[in-house]
Amino acid sequence: MSSLRNRLLRPETWLAALVLLALLVGMDALRPPQSQVSVRVFAASVEGYHRYLHPVTSRWVRCRYSPTCSAYAVQAVEKYGIVKGGWMGVQRIARCRASVPMGTLDPVP
Image: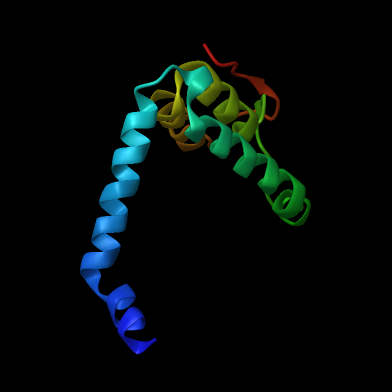
């Protein structure tokens, strides 16, 4: 039992797991967006956020754009794939400022 624990705690194990994960995501990103597993995982994680965390955070955090940033990110990822769509979602969140009027239309191109 302790030898398994020692192997799991070694940095080589975690590095190998990270490399394997990067390869899997990289190979997945080469497929069309409709076939990417990472797109479905991303959309499910955003849905989980909306179901469990958004009711708590909505008191303090409101999206200034329409569609909301999370809906924009899901639409972009579904249309362009996890890499480009994810980057578009990050850029959208980075554009959010207090100077942006509430309800500003900014659809996925």
